[in-house]
Length: 121
Image (cartoon, rainbow, N blue to C red):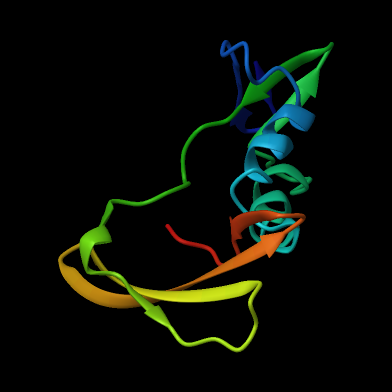
């Protein structure tokens, strides 16, 4: 299906049949704030070129432009000191696109579940 200049393909995975299913999957990994500010804003609520649309009860996706080619040194991660028992920061080495960096990732406890509180690509 083509809408304007964007081509969409029917989603065939039975686990993802609606935008609500996509949001539930995102919110099982990211905090609501990160999901809203970084994923929904750019991939769902973007009215000019959303990545996901529903048409006639069917979910469609315009793939591309999300994610990156990084590797993470899970064995070498370091937990950083925090004063809040519901927030943890970890530092981890990341290699991607020919460079190595140390990234700090925020993990937050929301409703009894630990979720990513920062974006990682």
